Length: 215
Ligand code: AP5
Ligand code: MG
Image (tube, rainbow, N blue to C red; front, side):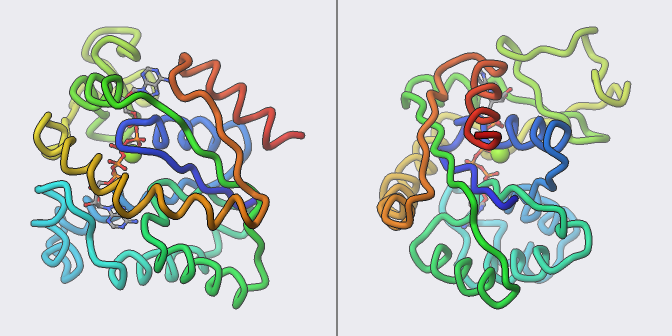
C-alpha cells in the first residue's frame, strides 16, 4: 500500500506514520526527517536546504523530488510506504505520479488531517523527540510514560526542533496554505482523497485512518 499523510505543520503526520509502521508494516518516508539528517551530516543537499528550513520556507522541488525518487526505489519500500510531508507543491505531486508510473506503482490513499491553526501552534511548541530512535512526544499531549525516558528504546536524550517556534510556525503555515493545500483538488479529482478529524486524540485519529486503509 502507498499512502500520503497530508496536512499542515503539527497536524500529526509523523505521529501517525510511526504508528502505521508498526500496525501496517509500512515504511515512513518523511522528507522533513531526511532533510534534517542531511543538514546534520552537512551533505550538499543539507547545506542547500538549511536556511530555508530554519526560516520555515519550502526547500526547492528538485532536492526533495531527488530524495524521494531514490528512496522509493529501495528494497525496504517494496512492502509499501507512507509519504509524510511530500508532496508539498503541484510540481512535487506531478513528479510523484511520474515516479510511481515508472516503477509500476499506484497511489492508494491521500489522507488529509484537518487541524485548527491555533491547535497547530500548541502542538508544535510542545513537541520533542527521542535523540536515539526518533520517537515523537509532546509535553502535554504525549509525554513519556516515565519522565525523561523514551518509551520505545529507554534512551534519556531528547531533542527539540529548531523550527518549532511561534514565528517559524507562522511561516510554515503560510507556505502550507500558499503552496501545499492547493494540491488537494489534484487528489480529489483522482478519487483518492479522504479527510480525517485531526483534532481528535492520537488514538482516535489512528483508528479513523486504519478504518480508511482497511476498508
Ligand atoms: P516537516 O518535518 O515535514 O514539518 P511539517 O510539515 O511542518 O510537519 P511537522 O513535522 O511539524 O508536523 P507533523 O504533522 O509531523 O506533526 P507531529 O506528528 O510531529 O518539514 C520541515 C521543513 O522541511 C519544512 O518547513 C521545509 O522547509 C522542509 N520540507 C520538508 N518536506 C518538504 C517538501 N516536500 N518540500 C519542500 N520542503 C520540505 O505532531 C506534532 C506534535 O503534536 C507532537 O508533539 C505530537 O506528539 C502531537 N500530536 C500529534 N497528534 C496529536 C493529536 N491528535 N492530539 C494532540 N497532540 C498530537
Ligand atoms: Mg513531522
